[in-house]
Image 1 (tube, rainbow, N blue to C red):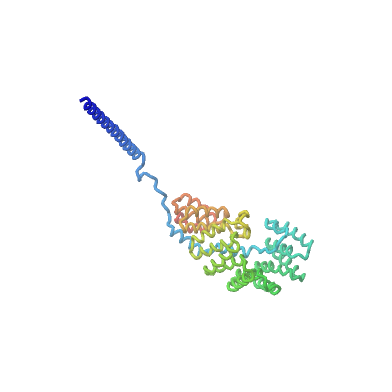
Image 2 (cartoon, rainbow, N blue to C red):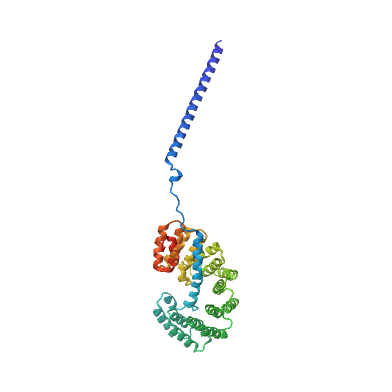
Amino acid sequence: MKTKSVVILVVVVSVISIALTYLMVSAVKTNEQRMHREDASLEKATTPPPAMQAAPAQPVVTKDQVIALFNSRTEVKQKKALEAFKKVMRDVPPYVGTGTKGYPVALNGQYEKAAQITQSEIAENPTLVDPRYTLAWIYARAGSYDKAVTVCTDALQLGSAAFNKMRYILGWVQARQGKYDDALKTCDDALRVDPYAAAFYYAKGRIQDLNGRNDEAIESYLKAINLKSDYAEAYVCLGLLYTDLGRYDDAIKAQKQAVSLNRYGPAGYLGLGLAYDEKGAYQAALDQLNKAVTLGAFGTDADSPKQPLTLSIGIDDAVMYNRIGILNVRLGNYQDALTAFNSAVAARLDYADPYRGLVLTYLLLGNKELALKNYDKLKGLDAELANSVASLVGEGK
């Protein structure tokens, strides 16, 4: 009987223990639920309803409107980037001399000092060709064309076949003066002395190119390439001419060859980017132009210090950055477009086109305040260009 009482007592204690445990767990769960409801109520109270949140800025113009403006500007001033290359061909004399002390001095714009140094080199050894070529080049770079011609003709009168090289700079000077027939005759005279000189076919091609003799220029460039298969500069000029003629596939092929021959030189990448751009392959164009503006000097290795395009190959950085900005707008990369247009402004403060790009991009981003600020700058540089976007910023109505 005593054992039965003990068993009953144990069972009662167990039941009471289970009940107490159940009550404690229920209380904890109830408390957690209550706290959860309080937290949810607090979050609901502190989070503003959707209608109270700031709405994103709305674009003032559509992307199609902006692209139409870019396209219409292209028709007015067609292929400005291609014109930058042609400007180099017209304005920058080619240098094929080597090892002269006056050359780096002239590159710094100290033409008079460079001429004096080079004249001393000629006096020390009158039979050397490169100092005479450099002296003619210095005068040509300074715009003293008559002096350059005199240096060339004096050297050629010495009768040495080595001085045939002087015809290279002589032909360029004659072309720069608009004497294209004389310039081409000079190239032909040089080729009679050395019919396998690729440089003179290249020089002849550039002269024909500038004079609008497109078929003849292509033929001369191809002859230069046939004689010198690694002639990267000839491939670049050939590709640019193909681009100008709308032969985009041929242009891309030529520029890819230029890049393969000089993968650290920006000229091939620029030419390739322009060909892709004109063809409408905008992402490919952007990739190539971005490579070009990040490279160092033309013809140097990857460890060389990076230089502006104006120093490395004579191309206007502002024009190229503006082109990159337009490509980014076409692709919807508006922040990258702002970066590119601002880089164009930094490269050349008097260049109006990137300010128009900034105006249109800020309008696309809904920032009319900054659009107006850049519009005011644009008006001061190019009233006609500013007028093309005046209605979009609420001016000129």
